[in-house]
Amino acid sequence: MGFGARPSGQQQKARDEASGLIKWSRNNRRAITSTLFLIVMLIGFTLANPDVFSQFKTYRSVMIALPVSMFLVVPLVFVVTAGEIDLSFPSVVGLASYAFASIVDQGGDPLMGIATALIVGAALGYLNAILVVRIGLSALVATLGMNFFLRGLINIIVEGFSIAIPEIRGSFIHSLMTDDPIKIVDHLGIPNQMLWALAFTALGVFLYNRHSFGVRVHCVGDNPESAAEMGIDVNRTRTLVFVFTGIGAALAGVFSVMINFVWWPTTGDGLLLPVLAGLFVGGTPTWGGIGTVFGGAIGTSIVAFIETGVIAAGLTGFFTQFFYGLIIILSLIFQRFNGGRVR
Amino acid sequence: MKNGYIIELKNVTKSFGNVNAVDGISFGVQPGEVVGLIGDNGAGKSTLIKILSGVHQPDSGQIIVRGAEVRNWNAARSRESGIETVYQDRALAPQQTITRNIFMGREIKNRFGVIKVKTQYEEANRLMRDIGFTSKVFDPDSPVATLSGGERQGVAIARALYFDADLIVLDEPTTALSLVETAKVFGFVQNVRDRGRSIIFIGHNIYHVYDIADRFVVLDRGKVVMTAGKGEIKSAEVLMKHMQEIAEMAHADAGLGDA
Image (cartoon, rainbow over all chains, first blue to last red; front, top):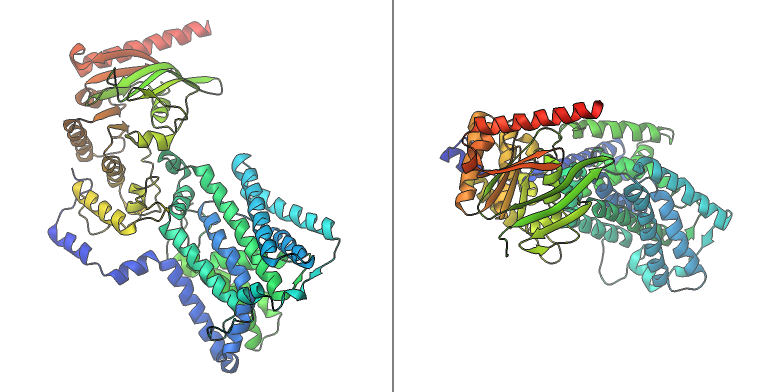
């Protein structure tokens, strides 16, 4: 046999000798593009204001809230790779963290609060999956509807009141998860939530590339008919990505409340556009089948640094949105070199 | 295995809306035989194939694998039973690597679901060499989208080969292939038969099917209308004549319906 055979011993040898580095960069070019973009952007900001961007505390301040976005972007990369979208995550963040905050506020165990938040998040993710996978609604419209519906539910339940939980400060779980580092290891001043977010990202990268779940997500998003013909349970895979996003949103919500000591009825609301921008800027295309979890984490970092950078560069806050837009478009142009649209 | 069939369908039906795509078909495949499945467009070939491969579940009837009836038949079960299908559309995920496509749905993994990436890569590499992929333009990490039609067919066949299936279903395997590539597919069929495995070969080209099959099963409007061994049919022309008669019968029936 020999399909498309061009046999030549020399060519075979050349293929075997293809350097590992070249291969690695070819396989990871989308993540590499967004990382280079972040570095170039930070160099630009440093040139504009060397004082601010040579100080570690600038980076530290960004790392306080950035983890919340990272817990969202990691599962969202799975959703988009599977050919779906979830726009309900801001309200899932709100509702799951409401469960956490109200349990802690009523004197409950914070661990119990976290467990409840995770269950709420997973259940809401499953509800999205029922609408999209079982009933067959458009993911875009159904999850947008869920976003309004759940936020409305929050407003009806709390009638505008927020929940402050200052008592959580100093508790073991709080110091384990957020800001005040436990003084066992010197973290170089990196907030604990950032370390958790990095660990979560690493788990995401592993699942996405090395676990059969992640690989099946790729196949389902790339060609659902083929995936089904090869025995992949397409509906189950799609359901799991929505549940995963619900869990990520619950974690994001818990961390958000832990960082701020307050739950607001608007918690999560402002995350929709920055997180989605970070996802796409990071190198995951809209059409499904491919993406990068690491790139997604980098993309949210790019978005998080824009505001700080714009202000530090001496421009007024009026420029922030302008630069958001500019950087999103520029980064997509760079990602274009990694392959055009396939659909 | 009292009847000796690898897989047997008994009175299987499948309808879509009010179309009876498969209307009570009974059909089996014995070890080492090449069955040519023929019929006009809409005869039910694709639906029958998708029932065999588990993509469609039959509305009624039995599926018997090596003598035992199987319930809750699906694509994963079909593959576990030793049936591999090379679909007309190749069933590939074009943006994924060759390796990922070969192991799609049946990854080499440990019990925690962690994929043995290195093993898969090496197996894919070996398999590509076996079927004659020696280009340096691509390797097991190349996306399938970069391959030609014949090369994609090669990946789809390599996949069926890897899992050492007892029955390989080839759905229109020569469509859109060059003459040289078609000859390769024929060589492959010969090869599989020599190893004592079975093939179901679906084709539009009666001459191709005649050359390759030991037994012919002709479908028309969801039913088996003719089964014949190669000994009963002297040449491709005779087979062609039978097919024409069946088509005329169908025509007449349709005319009757109009009247």
